[in-house]
Image (cartoon, rainbow, N blue to C red; front, side, top):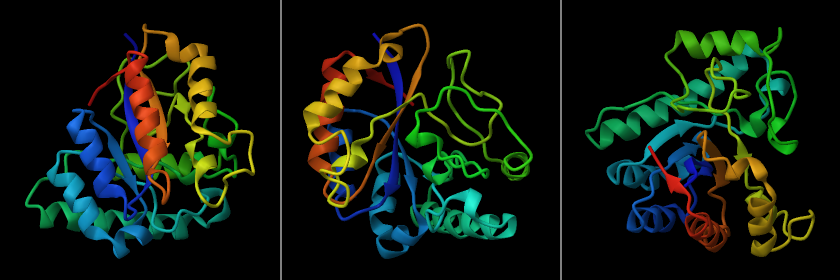
Length: 232
């Protein structure tokens, strides 16, 4: 059976608690990457997720592309979100188990929005390297194990092997892209041959965006029907 890490970006929304309850009922772990600006508006949803045992990762404060930001502005943005995450764990009287960071759009500092083209391989360059060095210095890492040979294991940010493109079904994007229905998302899963490889683990990106709850639940159930085992 294929094994995967489930990662969920752009949290929280008013639907986050329902998503957490759905995952908890199915005993499915996930890393929830939060936006600081949204967390400020709804901190209790993330505290609820922490209390349910979910790991919280940093997805920036403002969700701006790192390649469009000055280096210090990117640091300030990351730290704003990180302080909110630290506070959430303190409010739950629980230690923060890991420091994880995912770049918005997987733009790692050079303006390349990798999530929009599907990640194959990544190489550091003069623009991405200083950001990687900062992440390393401040204890950020990626927790994924047994990844494919093409996966950049030395990277300090959390990357992926498959992005669902579920955001194409949110209220803002619905009808504007090639994916227009839940069936289209499921067909995308079926069409990806790499996902069927049981030799290595997979890292799946989904999104916690307003209006996507039913889509998320249906797609997660579909992964389960296909035999996927989600792991910590």
